Figure 1 (cartoon, one colour):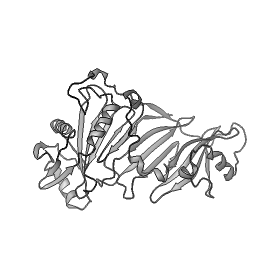
Figure 2 (cartoon, helix red, strand yellow):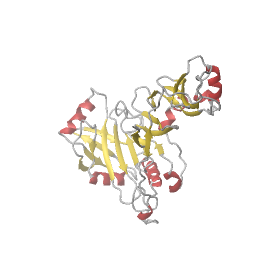
Figure 3 (tube, helix red, strand yellow):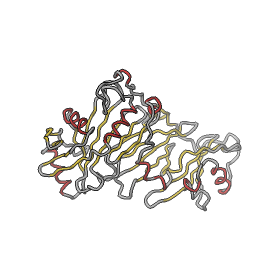
Figure 4 (tube, one colour):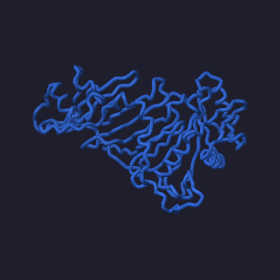
Length: 359
């Protein structure tokens, strides 16, 4: 994850419109103004909305979750933000006893379920979700209220992300779409079915394995840097430190393959390490896993990057060793950088797997 790309990771992967078939095979991460949608490889879509970007006094975020399938329902959660010692935080804790009320265009749509201090959010009722889905398709004043404190949720960008979710799940033109036409042109049976979570096997590397070539691997740093350059499309951007004097870290994965690590870049509050798999003898055939790693341990590569220094928005990816190569096992963000809470407001995955450990 090169430093020049840290902020765009929270932006849209693409703003172009795709067919349902093509977008279904590609995870979606798209944001428009004050809203974001992330759809993972199972076709579950999560839509997160926030207060206006210029209104950080009472930060708020709403999460809508809809799984794939013609009869899928929509679940809603709301999270109220604010500094730990602020009046906003104190009011938020009252949600345990004084529930959060939803107002749309000054009309009271009742109280949410009790605020969970452990989870940090309150669940919306089905009636509130229905009212919100209607309000978000047009210009609306949406407020979450506790006593005299009012957190205002922006509706700017909600149409665009709702349409993107409809496209990802094959709902455009159906009666179950977020953005509906007067008369549906497709039956709900055409909506894409949920995909199963893929299962992948973590194989623990064997750093003490004996080389199949019976020779000890030995290569100068300059030689390693030279062969690794061919795996990076833009070295100056993605791994500018590849040819510096910092050391390479090489460990054995099995009797034939090695793991090589080298610092790639450093920013104001993020760093990125390059990780490669290569053969221990010619032909080396190096394969780049990532230039944005932040940790490697026991067959798992992790990348954790902040969207900004205060850490209220985070990108995370993981890859695991399968015995032949590293396969991505997880990718997610915590949403937009809107001061909801340290560590980010939500988990918005774009890639999920069921990791099984080989015994």
